[in-house]
Image (cartoon, rainbow over all chains, first blue to last red; front, side, top):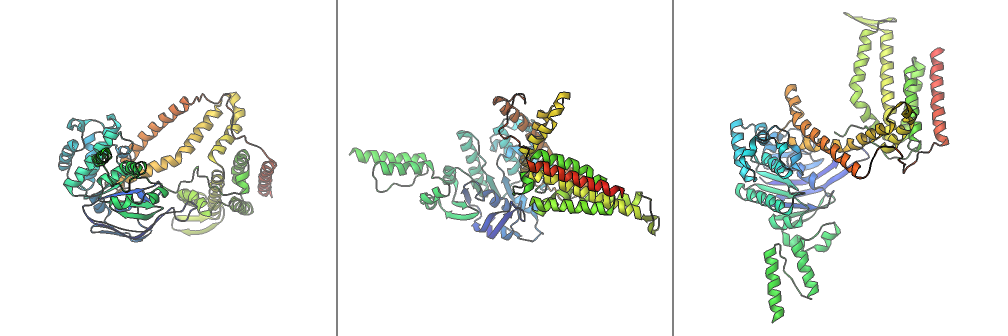
Length: 288
Length: 265
């Protein structure tokens, strides 16, 4: 489903001394089936932005359109349940939302709320367990007996179980170890590829943004600062630094190589393979 | 979720903000009694004037005060109506079927409403104009004479400051979990009553669990920094009783004397 924001403003706590504009004149189009990364410093409006996609927040002015659903400022009648069924949202630390007696019940909670029969929901839970990297035996266990990482996987399965066509991820790999982080990100990337979901990933991790996203959106003070492919974004290093963001490590590394070796130009590489290939070439040339 | 004002400090600068927390607490304690002594129209008018001038003095936006009163408006309405039905004194104003409205009933109902509203306003003014930490320091000092009879003043104050400190955290947590469950299709606001009660389970269980976890983490963090109760503990911020605090207390006493005097004329 295409997601279109047109001139959305959002204000927190209107009419109090704590009033704060969180989104300003926010217009963006996210094409169906794309993988979009949203990056920005703390307080740049990332969370506010993604909560508009499934109608948890309503724009103070402007329009949000998600597939056939339109949320217009000031209008009340929207089929929120239908919208939320289509838009799966994985919050930061999703393991905090677990509450059922067994893992199976918790995974089935969403789908049943959205009107799926119990049998079908249980079936989906069974299918999802290996997909999120958990053994099927754990279905009958209380989620509170699991480790933190396992709990997070259960919570994510609980969101995926509704088979959303838009998947919004808010720092899904926060506070995981490097291996867990990569597993988690690969899980979402595979899911994105196989299910053809429109995926939106909020992250502080430039490497993840560069690795997985088709387009990157940079937010600053509630406004869109930049939008485009990774080369386009990470070219503007000085501006990114100004707004409290960094370059991916491999890009930074090659920039350092450039100054150390007085090179005219270095390519922009986003993974270990590309970087080491370039360094290898460089050594060969210097050796000659 | 944004309309609970307990423990919400509004940092404007006013004479009420600058008073010592102890004098504010004593004044409010006194005022609650005084307000209950007001039993005629003149006294109640003075109470209203007094309360509104305090609100103006505090420079706290009126919206905050209103948000504090709003949750108990139903309670006030309820007690008002109860008075209309149950008090049977004074002249009859009118009869409608089985219902008879007495003059005294109307009077009592209005007075009770005034009392409740002004008390809520004045007590919320204390928390709105005092930093929570100052408030608990003040309470601890006020209660410290009672240590002799075994009242754990320091521990009580600590409990209070911890609960005040965690109210905003708890509210944020509530909002976050509510949103997470709403994203999973829970509807907290519509549907039949039974279903709405059931909808709160997915909210309450995670909240309890996180509250217990947090309590344990906090206890560990405090112990690892050597916390061993209040014995021999010094304070970074020392409370100072100033001339204006004495004045504030005398002012409230004077206000009380006027109300008492009005009772007898």
